[in-house]
Length: 451
Image (cartoon, rainbow, N blue to C red; front, side, top):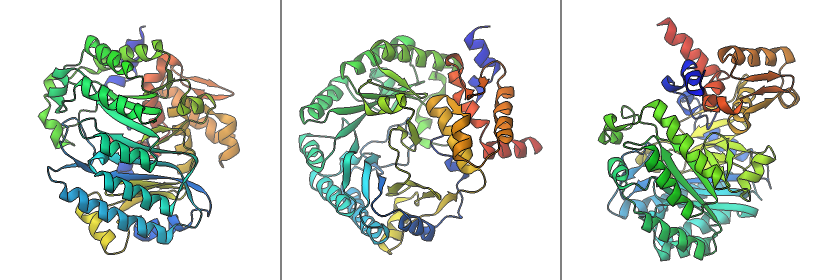
């Protein structure tokens, strides 16, 4: 039996499975977590510890049709200016609750398009953040950069503020595909921005590229990856495009008839994967590649790769605080999400309170299952010894969980005394295997089958 036929038999090409950047996943968040919980969880951060901070800037000069992120278009700078002022108020509110001496292991600005901020706004925002929690030694300050919305002055401001990692969205360099997804971005423009970033001493460069786009063929994705490799990114995210026009209205601009089949999507991924491996990149998790010298590659080799809302990371901080509309925070106690609408979020902040409107407080075996799923997504292996050491679960109960997954994917997994592993040929199934340990997905499936 071929690998394709085995994957078909397991239902890979029909499955809709979460990306598992959290557990439980965000659709399971509910209204039981509010501003007071968020404030209390911040106050419980140990004094002098390290945390991560994410700042969401939801505005875009153009709304790319493929994107399902929470963003809003604007041709005027006025909403961006007002939003930046609100962020300063939110940072001041954070300062009221955050214990003394906390430092940042990671600071990330995402969106949207954070590079829509003016140079002065960038400098002021970074200064306000670092006045509350400075960057720790060896800390990382990364920014998502739109090559079509950046210039020398803004790059200078970011570097002066301490940016030491930049992330560029590529998606695909083929003009037909760019037109089909509403994101025209010439290779020459992207190349020039990458050179500007390198010239300013930023040695760490990330890039995102998509497979499964309309009109994408094996030859086209190979050509785009070859061009991307000319930029020599230190780290690459090879994401699968999720075509969900019933959820993201702007995706209705993309013709469903031009989409590759699920089987073709896997072939597109394999073509790109082979190119990155041939170029000397390490493969990390299900969709990342990095130069062996990159911090994430080193973390993966050491078994310290982790997963959060930005995808894979080597950051081990137990707390991630999200600022801005729709941002999600992670604490040892659970998850908290800010109001999704910019107006609702701003209204709460201006009234002197956080906008937290939903989340999830950990209960039962959430932490156990979350760690199992993270281990599968990061290492393709669940260590029996680690789980028994770190969690209150009996060997019999853990074995039962492993055995259930093994039965769901007969002859596709390795179940041994060491634990449960996903062999190389079965790794396209990783998210589906992870779902076997998702108690909320199992409950939903039972309810659905009963209807």
